[in-house]
Length: 403
Image (cartoon, rainbow, N blue to C red):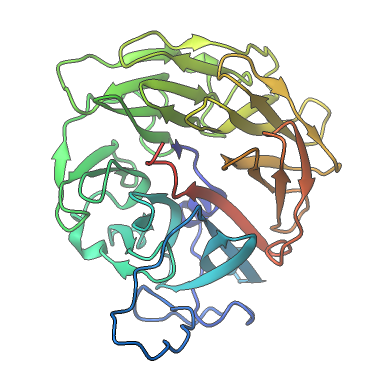
């Protein structure tokens, strides 16, 4: 399950120079760059005296996210920032600080297995894409950026079928999108042929996913909402919505379970469902309001899921959350707080739990974490220290590939 939206940090890095910094997450961000991409390891306990080797930890359900913490405003109008990988395990949110040169940035995270995860983004204009790899469910990170080719400059999404096979999609500045494939866990890559685009080569929405034996790319970059088969170049792209029926602004979300797929459209608050690769994408929700949109969606193996976005019809941006039991009928959810903002990501967790991130409810960067314990029908705020001056813009769960 991937989200194909372009987070705020992506647009900031593309349109303005931002300063990077390092240090612990209790410090204020600083504009002094550090020389390389690294991740600070969490403290480890002293092992008990035992003749046996240290056991490999059992990775239960873990959620990773990307958070950007903002600091002072610079002379060019941009704000200092520092980035973190967030980990949610056993009811606790913690942060792993990342250090990188300006104007690098991590855009998102994804799991390949219950313990192997990848973070992706950009090292800055002309420097190539960024790719980090973790083998301990996000506690520490290895930089594989130099394993990527020089192009594309920005990696917008990544998806891994297992610990070996994976794909990334990205683009450079004013260039067409490109897809790369690895069969050794990200240490080497080859190009995957894509049909030419007809849109404006700057902004776009891209989401990768696996359905049955198919590998698919959901893309929108001016030529309409299109599903492209990456595993078979002889299958022509499938046009889902023409350009006038979708939007660049919010991106389009994608979720897959087995052979079934769902797309959350960025305009019209529509969910589209396809029963199998090659089958039509049928619209399940229709909303003609141009002010309402969806940008994130996630379903589990039982087809219970959640979707989220925003609604600006009232003159202010308000969060939108939907829930489903079977993936075919989506009902509005109730949020037990009134805030301005939009839902930028959602995850359906084990049992009846779900988590959602609301961004932009104030002038300054901020995020709220919402928690549901009834399958996404009602939501309450889960207080965290990642609120004021923070923006969280991507989530992933490590149980996805097991379902």
